[in-house]
Image 1 (cartoon, each protein chain N blue to C red):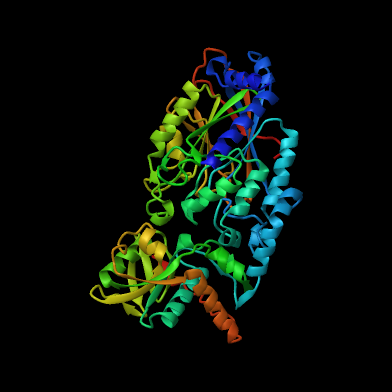
Image 2: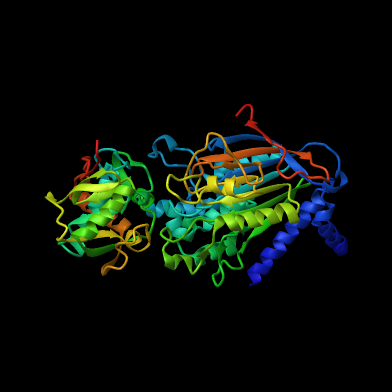
Length: 312
Length: 244
């Protein structure tokens, strides 16, 4: 409970620092100067703290948290407003996890300044208590999830269903969804977590963030997987069956996207999905430019232009 | 100061004050993470953990004679893992065990190159603390389970051969003999597959829990070859085929 208070206090202070540090968000309100936001993201890092070993074929020498941290530091020095997100499966895959149960993984993410994450199925692998304990001891970022009912579990007080971050005057709403646990995660590791329908819950959160909380961009972190041949909920379905999610940062299926995928959502707007493989081999980057939508916001009716960034 | 901060916080989050913006442009890119530069703080944080991993995980457990890969419907890496479970199940628990399995999703790296294989590599190929379980099944139950394996596209098997046709297991032979629907078979499998995975048909059967981790079975299997001074036996023959 004291850790929860600490968490709330810390996020409160972060919010205060953001507001104090970015007074232009108010001073320039109403001006039409372009506002920029850089989103960096990972998924399915699977305890790859070191670069891949020399016997890993084409992956040898790639990845590793020290190189990723250096890259993120460089981008932060070049861009004023950076958001760093992860779509789950932080844990499991190297002896680090067998020996230390996720402690160095969470410490590394905290050091890199992750803004939010979501739980993947493998984040349960040493038990839900372990994940909650590691986050309590070493996590300096929130776990955002709206479709796991954690009542009575140690994650009850260690997750939030939504988060609002303000960067350079832009309000960003974030929610998160996890995959069906039955048939995937052993029951004793879930500690009674109940999986709820991700579509209805994410749709509700996204609408709340966009309509009630006036967020300019709504992001859903997802560990559902990008798409399936069989009839199974995925990011592709989440994108099309909800109306207010602008961006889905995906994971689980370990897919390296060449380009983000775009779907028409239920509001007739565009929902973008991106995923960057696994193992910390890649860092995704999405650079948004925002225009002034004025008082009469036409929800999603105006189209966003999406293109590859020159030089990359 | 405190009051000022609170007022600022409050107005900052008052929706009414927000002018509203919309994303007009999105440029996508990304980076391959390369070891060009390393963050010194993160490196320093990681150092004691890395030293401990290195101390415990860098011993050679055996020699792999040829490169072995994870493949569907099956590959030499899956054969090797399933062989290790079958051999160790027979040796340690029950000589009557006829077959062993590992679901394809449970194989977590794509290849082991020829040469010395480290303890840490066996951890990476099987990071889960999955336990070996042994159970008796009827021929009909085995067929249903193999149909599930077939629908999944294949996986690691030892002790049997089969052909996948229309997502079903056909021409199943156990130890060279065609599967008898009325027969009884003894299998070694993962507690994950039996109790938690996507197939429900084994969940209610009586099961012998061994408390022996599948990963340890593979390590012990390799160490046995090492003690005898020979490379680990690796079978590159297909045990599961897709119908042509």
